[in-house]
Image (cartoon, rainbow over all chains, first blue to last red; front, top):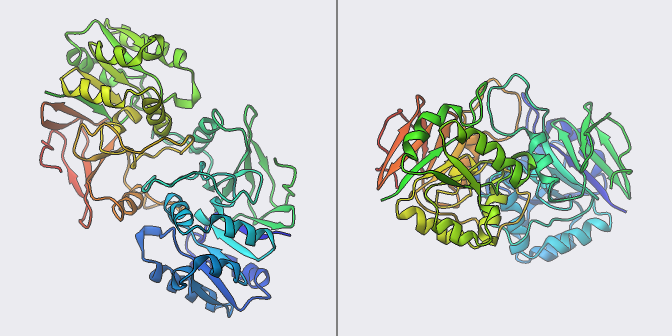
Length: 235
Length: 235
């Protein structure tokens, strides 16, 4: 009975933090008053307090209260008692490290499998996959494992963009990196563009937003998937 | 008595593999006949054999023979007996994992500290720093540690580029990522652009090529460093 919303990005260019998602979130969190916020990914290194405050301001627009998990003495209980949960973006290595350090990876998985509504953006969406190994982030800390929640039977690559064929930069394209991933790992990777999100209700996965996504499978040509497609076939 | 050449990239746009470095390499490896090649980073997932063959073709132009470390039964002895060593680019997580798995991280460090001439490109340069934590690569495998050779008293960020101020993409810029790194780590990071390399003779470090580099320090504004600058002040 999962009830997840996994967005590629929190913020679209030229728009406020979470703005494009607010109508969606109002519905998604319709039975909630307070959302538990997990600020561990700390974008730009901002503090848990600053990140939670920023998020509270955005959620106030849809009349929802935000409380940061760092405000609770017992983070496991905070997860287990939450009406709804949001994990924000930032650095995925840091986020995963903190989830393990605070021993909430398993409680979070169990709680979300029971149907507590969840929002992930960027790093907060990455952790819904089988592993964090298709993150774009720098390994600024060393987590005890790369394994993540496994709420979907594949990995995400968020902020996905097709290779810029005009570029003279010789760093690897996103596609090259994902191909390297598939030399050592078998499960599919979905490249989710900014403005796209996955809506997961029970076991039904739908690609939302106006853009296509790109599906990468080991030893196969990547395929474009149209917006509004059902993705439950991916495994 | 270190003798290292650490390049941001193996290949410039519109030019052949290693081409721009060949005149430099001829001098650098002047007393060598055979160079030991470490192909572990496997760019695009190519095999050790393919990568070594490609590298042998490039080095043949300056009359040097290449042998891949995978051809030796004992990789530690291969390192200890090498006349010169080259570690190619690809995925840094994979490279570091293989260096640990084959137990050559320490022998490689010791050999290079004795003055055996070394070339690193991209991932092969990353490993010369204190840690691999400023790599741009995807964590496709889980290495036992992020610690690397520490031949220079700072970290490198290779394929460095300044933020594209015209971009509408909301993924983090290189500078943002390095700032996040500095929330948790104290040592400096040098952003090395494609076409730049460091020349290290004993303890003298010089920025070579025509481009500036960018020096990031914790709690400090990044500074541009001109080509041909001496960098031994960085620690």
